[in-house]
Length: 165
Image (cartoon, rainbow, N blue to C red; front, top):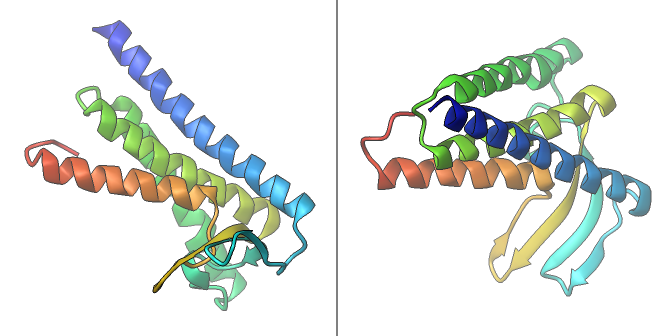
């Protein structure tokens, strides 16, 4: 039983590290190779690659906050939340494995964007998707990780109503 717990914890840590790595590598490639504000059509008008620095949170929320509030809201609180979430995910031995991996995606994506905020005072966003009437905001791989994790959490919570989170 202890061996299974160890394997599960290693898997969680690996998923977190892989999400952070994928995010940071993709952002570094974009920073080095895509001119800021440039729009590169990858698949016509449907998939665009760009390079935008977001000094706020999702969709620019909070970018006009005073610096001390930005520090608290966009760096301090997320550090605490992500550390608690990682700690709880690693220590909850009876947590469903898929649910634990979903939380690892959220944690990895959150840390990826947090690294940018701490190092650059902004987050590098670079994907834009447009299909018919659907148009996303500009996002990055950390956002993809958080979204995948959140959707998995919602799916598992609905599918298994008696599962403990």
